[in-house]
Length: 123
Image (cartoon, rainbow, N blue to C red; front, top):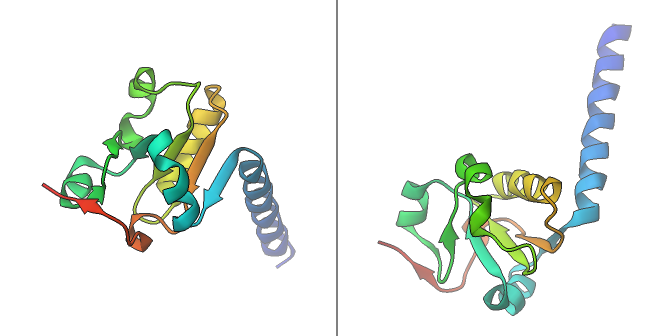
């Protein structure tokens, strides 16, 4: 029983550490805040191509999280990067990767594409 409590506490501590570390470099924006700045930024949809084709924010480029490392050359470090995925977890992981690679101005759409009410394009 004591071991179980220790494991739970360690997992909670790790989760809190990651949350607060991410908060230092990732801005989580409401849809209105996101809409204010995404036209001046690099708007990146990190979902898979089949998800992107079903519908994406107008003007977004598709760089799936699974390809992000190989496609970093497509992103500029001197311009803000606005990320989104379906719900927020993949874009948070993409932000972490970008931060490690020296990108500084990184924002994420709160709630992801499923919460987006703006213009959408689909194939």
